[in-house]
Length: 302
View 1 (cartoon, rainbow, N blue to C red):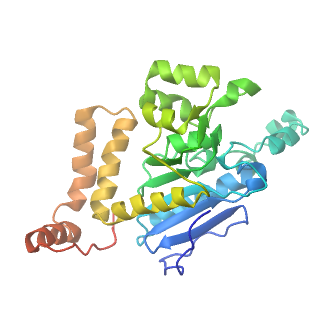
View 2: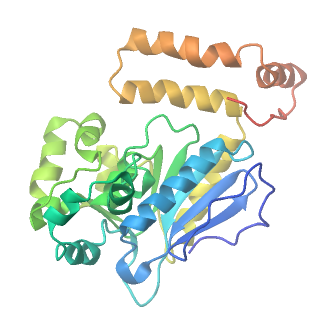
């Protein structure tokens, strides 16, 4: 379970309104912890919750005082542990009772938004490109389908030893369309990607780490140690210059997007470094190094 939240910090803009299916807490004033709260459904995500989550991550990027996000899943002794078991298949099955012809005839933007994914994909994460703030997935239990698609596109993944990862869509006659298919190739290479998506088999936490999906495997009994470790990693990130973190993340993501090395380097210099060079955080970082003290960073304005 997530650690107790600290008193809510003061924000430039208030967080978006949320349903009980999504919890937003703050382990430290710089870190936002998002918890999927449907343990009875293995934290599967229905359509309205995708938009809810997308609004959180949009708000996170825009809120200067926050520097890192964590996403995890709640657990209960009454149900198997799960980070996220993917889409709410009951909702999907029920939706099939409504004629696809009726939906196609009613193709207003409002209808599409209510029935489809947000532009940032499954859980507001699977197609989140160029998000400013790092997101760490704290994975306990099942991480399947759309849950895996979210984790693949997170910046780091901390997993419990009992976590299970997979894209089992081929086993139920559907396809992983939320962004993971091209991304897993960049993470693990063609042959391993083909093995994962064509067989639908699951990877244990250690195998997922060996393949490159997971940064660290944590021994855990109740789920709290995984989130605790994710918070520790997030605190290390938050201890660095927020401007440097934003621009460094930008550069890595350009490689992730397949932009050529020289083109990406020029874009980072032009679009990122030009806004950092000579700025108050750069001056503070150099001054703190010379004076042999801890830097006192200002909230990023990038």
